[in-house]
Every structure is written in C-alpha cells, then in structure tokens.
Length: 240
Image 1 (cartoon, rainbow, N blue to C red):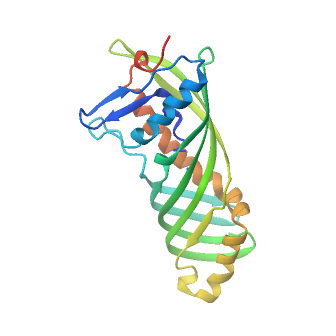
Image 2 (tube, rainbow, N blue to C red):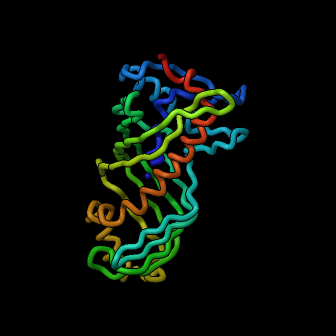
Image 3 (cartoon, rainbow, N blue to C red):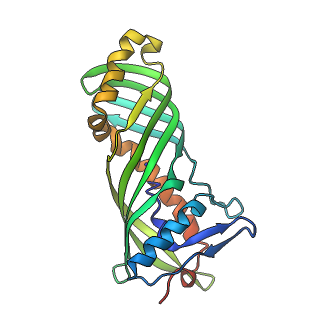
C-alpha cells in the first residue's frame, strides 16, 4: 500500500488551499517536538490527499497505479489499472525527525481498498489457479512504519527537503479480504476452493505475495511526496 506509505510527507505540515491554488503551512514544528509533529501531520492528512493539478501533484485518494507485478516461484500475478483508496483516513500513530542524521520515522494506520484488473496463473498456497478479470483487496486497518532519509537542497536560492531513500515494514492488523472474479473462466465449482483459501488463509497469502504488491504502492506515494517537497520551502515547515 505506502503510499501511503506513503504519507511520510505529513510531517511537513503542508496543505493545499483550493481557493488560492497554493500550498500553505498548517503548523510548523520544532524537530524534537513529537506531539506537535503528530498533530500537525494529522491535520494535514485530509488536505494533502487532494493534490494540486497546477503544480503537477496528483491526488493520493484515490491513487492510481497503472501496473503491479508479483512473480513468485509458483505464482505469477499482474494487476492493472489499480485504484487505491484510504489515504485520507490515515491515522498518524508515531512521528519523529532526527536533524543530525536527516531521517524521519513514522508509524501510521489506514484502511486500504484496492480495485482493478488481474491476470493470475500458478499456485495460491497449495492450489493451482488461473484467471483474469476484476479483483478487489480491502482491509479496515493496516499499519505501516516508514523510515526515510532526506537531504537539504537549494532551488533558486530557496531550501527544500529531498527524500533520498526509504524503507518500510507493515503489519496486518485486521483481516484482508481478497476477491478474484472469473477464476477458471467463471467455473464456480473450481473457483470455490480458491475463494475458501483466500477467505481462511488471507494472512499467509499476503505474507507470501505482499511485498511485490505493496512496494509499488508505497513508491507511488513517495513520488507524490517528493513533488510536494520541491514546492515547500523548509523555512515554512520547521521552527529552528
């Protein structure tokens, strides 16, 4: 999903003013004031997801990811035209920034609802499966921890933060509902055992194929964050 992961940028305290078509600071914070960082980030969430067309910054709720591929030894899945919803309901659980190391660590929880098209061939756990059509993946809460590194750059004499790398982990807090339409060409007798496995063994399935699916989503969120950073001066984001 980060991503929305992706929402490391919430600590920046930036928000879209849809009337003025400009980016404003919600509440700048001192780097060591964790309470301020968390509250400012939480206030930012519903606004950050709006995006800004004039600045070339897309919405993050919904977020569109054209293609996601997961290739495992016994299973190949391709997801297309993916629509990801849930970022606007993000809850910031933890946020800290280390100025000397130029790092940010954030823990956040959010619901995820992903829809699109799929092509699948191989084994889901121990069952052979094949199909193509619509798919849906949703959960009421998924927790991400994101560690990001950044550096200070200058553009036209104005300082900005630029993310130079990140890593993430995720925790499956609540059940993940997985649905593949048109398995085995719509043969329900063959599809039922697969659907039963998807319903009963969702955790094992996500753990098996989750990283190749979630990483492109988190990367897509990070790409949006990078665009925001290029229009937000650092002196509007922090109290020195």
